[in-house]
Image (cartoon, rainbow, N blue to C red; front, side):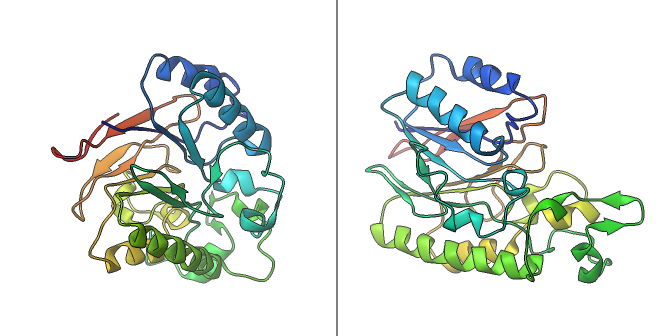
Length: 261
């Protein structure tokens, strides 16, 4: 019975104690695949997380994506062009799928196309990251001359190629994102901040195909929720800065997927 464990939003750079808290929560578990969902704490954060997992679970597969905080101070192209993560002994999903005998893991950071925000606020306002006394700090991401929806489309197109490769394999597909492909995964009420959390283009790609994932994992909102709106489990593990949460998921071949948080 293969078991997947999802963790996200550990923010090791600002909350180093989250690494030991995560280690305590997973102690003694049987895990086949670890999924690390972004806002890991930058380069040092992901290195530390993977090193700990490799030490305690040397046989387990590990796949990971970045989060928006991991991009602060970097150009968006850092997601797929920078070689600084080549030393991390895990599958970086922005560059290729994790292809296992039991499943294929497809993933991306995701970004956002504003589809999850307040529809009465124009895109021009969202591009400024400010509305009245509300603000979002992703102005630290170096976008060049691209808008956020343009970046979201680029990531969605890249994801689509990898997702279709996974379909060809014919094995169960697991999707890992940092942001959300569907607004249903945001447990907060729809508002200004929600615009910076959803890339609906990726959700559209997933729903285009008859074969759906056996599970989809995300984070970003720091608020847990599990829904099956489209006929498969979608899980926002919802770790908060000082509240580490993990999700375990196992899928027996005959009885169907099961999960627990």
